[in-house]
Image (cartoon, rainbow, N blue to C red; front, top):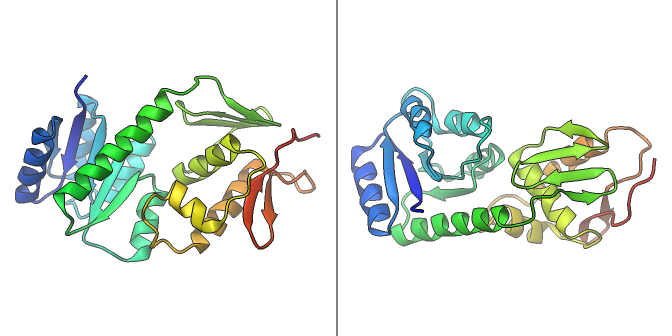
Length: 232
């Protein structure tokens, strides 16, 4: 089945150029010139959204936030003229799968779109049963996590971190490795953002003081998920 891409940008020239780029690459393309129109176009069930930040009405951050609150997961490649680290971090924390700074090469955008599609395909082609370690259970395709039988809400990056740890229990990962694996090639993100996300994730999966630590700090090396089942 052909993949459908929704291009969201208020600049008619950019919309036209990106539409031509994606059509030549074999994709079906829809477009929207505002945040509100973009949300309306989700009824067309795009397989990926290329989303500009600077939009009239609802900006790209708010559109991203609302897409992530929908049941169906739609990958998002965010575009912006803003190249500040804080802008990148915010976009990725809200759930963007990739963040490109304008201007960019068309080939760079196509490569990123294809990489996101490969990631989604690998995820959906995996096991439908949950990853389970101790009291942690994670359903990948459904983006659903339970801790000791209770559903917990994780941000997209918290979810990706937990999934990565659960796929490699007991293995130690340094900050730079986690930045590469979870944030992709966006290595400009301050490595301290890893520590912040780990702290937030711990607060959600280790809610009771005195419980065994699930994500362990290995001093001088990084972090790992306890490989053995957690007792109570």
